[in-house]
Image (cartoon, rainbow, N blue to C red):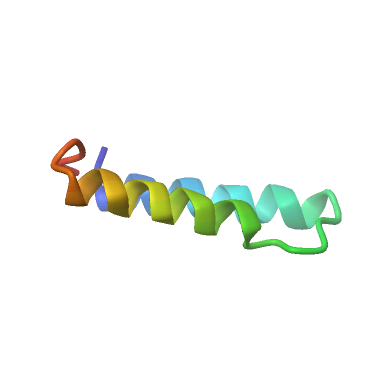
Length: 47
């Protein structure tokens, strides 16, 4: 998985959440970003 793929996933999630009327669009994307950064720090994700 590369950087473009991660960005595409995040943009898609924002679009779906917006389409379905989410009040806090970025809640899930922040969790995903945090998860990926922890995985990179631990060496479990190489991008």
